[in-house]
Image (cartoon, rainbow over all chains, first blue to last red; front, side, top):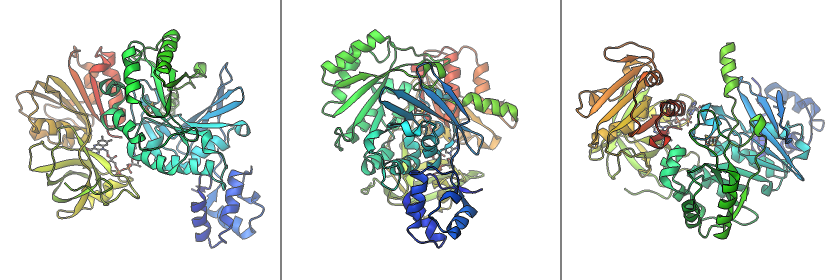
Length: 345
Length: 223
Ligand SMILES: Cc1cc2nc3c(=O)[nH]c(=O)nc-3n(C[C@H](O)[C@H](O)[C@H](O)COP(=O)(O)OP(=O)(O)OC[C@H]3O[C@@H](n4cnc5c(N)ncnc54)[C@H](O)[C@@H]3O)c2cc1C
Ligand code: SF4
């Protein structure tokens, strides 16, 4: 099987051209073709020598894969389905909103983290995405030219695929790659501390942490990761970095009726986040089949937001998008497709 | 223990036991305190420059002289194939113990698949009290790790579910099937689940479906 060129960092391209005995500058030329232009085959890399193209063609392909299916929500959100060589599927959600257009990308097929409220958790883990498969969700998107922001909030825990996340964000933000400002990119995690350290030390992209409750025991009940990396340790770790408008840290907070929406929670959040320059995004819960959890009403969410603001914490309620096509937060899953596949075989 | 700047300290392997094909118990001298149910990070390097340590539940009691860990080799993985090549006398590197998957010393269900049995063995060896029901799922009869320790313990009801082989006093079928058939699961006890993500998520769904409040479920996922 040929290897994909898409997703290779400049350093990796330099290694490849070195091994093929090609001049070093060829690496930069290939990166230009991959990330700044729009070609479908190695043969179209017209400033490469014929020999270079031939050598590349023997072992590599570009690696673009077009989406096989798109579902469009009444609110304009689109959910794209990308196939993989292993017959598994990757979902990405395109969310247009006034002058912004955000793509929510996946970092894994399925997820291992088992959060109680999440649909992806129910499908288990089927594999890591390569850097190329992450970049492909962006580059092969029909609306690629319109994109203003990328969020790593699709299927999977990005920091359980730290290599794919670090390399893909490098390609998105480097001069040799897409040349985007890191301010346009947010990586969302449940807080795998060692990988978070690597990210904070080496990337300028924004960070979002899934918090969901400030209390240890409660967080343990809905997020098994709390046993391993407690939220208090995550916050302590964050305190050793500086966050500004240039690199923000935000906290995601899905609101569950009667569970994490009381004034006791407001107080504890204020205590926990005291002194940290951050914001909280409140998110409506989209119930998944068989869940024992219910969503907090919008009125209660607004009250909760106002209470947090009065404690000095910048807080917003995230608009829910693409609910009707299961593209909203926590609803991405290709489990049904997997089941169908198993049935087909 | 002297942990270096990357949080790692050397230990020398004193025993290496292959309990079944490509499943090992490694032991080394205990020079730290821990609570039963905690994990340590393990690496074959003394730094984290290239690779992060992987986590392993401590399988031995918290007063034992030797620390045991139980692991199976993931042939395409990073650490376990390298770890499996280590021999008695070789040095490996460990982090300080951490984690909050801790025993409640009350009546509880312990549910594990595969190597997920390790923290429960540690809890038992550390003198766990309270009536426990331990349900262990495995594919093969030789994969009920530590079964000799669990058999004939007064305050422990020990149930083995084997999905691929039939055995004496062993439920033939998957652990999830056993749970589905289990009537009257108590709703006022804790359920500790430990193992691969798929098992944890499936078992949690079954328990919730059977009326167990999700707050009673404590899960440790081997991600
Ligand atoms: C809290 C905690 C405690 C743990 N305790 C133990 C323990 O006591 N004993 C033990 O044996 N292990 C335990 N683990 C797992 C252990 O940390 C390693 O992940 C495991 O040993 C594999 O390490 P590796 O470096 O060999 O493989 P890796 O390089 O990490 O990857 C293994 C291979 O399997 C694939 N893979 C990884 N996970 C899955 C999955 N869930 N489904 C399908 N494919 C997968 C990867 O893509 C890769 O190909 C624990 C994990 C955690 C988080
Ligand atoms: S919420 Fe995120 S980390 Fe948790 S199971 Fe879902 S995808 Fe994984």
